[in-house]
Length: 152
Image (cartoon, rainbow, N blue to C red; front, side):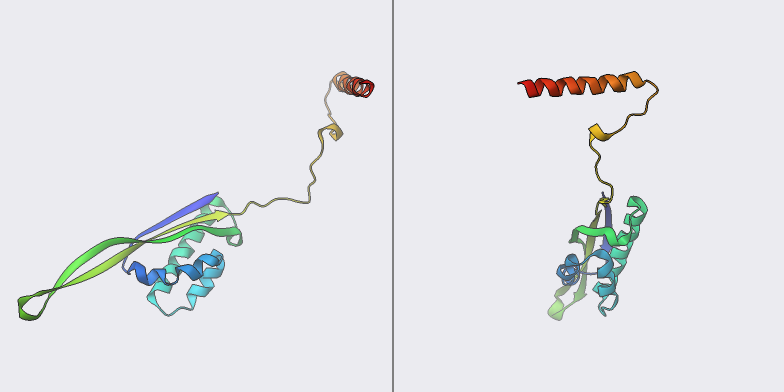
């Protein structure tokens, strides 16, 4: 199972966010929150909010504890670019590009397997039905098959 979170048009350049991407991808989402909480940069604050939002979405949709979640995909894409201009020397124009970014987070949950319950073979299962004659007939046919296999 997986949960998707997509944050658009964040007022920070993608290059500044990608600086922390490699370190965060290696961790679990719950661990990455503590790592990003103590960062001083604006990028760490934005990533912290994005990942905490993704975790809360996954808890609601998948109904899973935060410790069982892993990053399946964590990417930072370039968004819109606001183009502004300032006056320059000798009547020229100096461009200002304000870049925006999109964050895409896909979290997947681990499947919890119960090892305590052993699988029961079909032969050992007792069938409790009101019609006991059918159970006796099944046993007789199994015995006949065993005898035929042994004789060959």
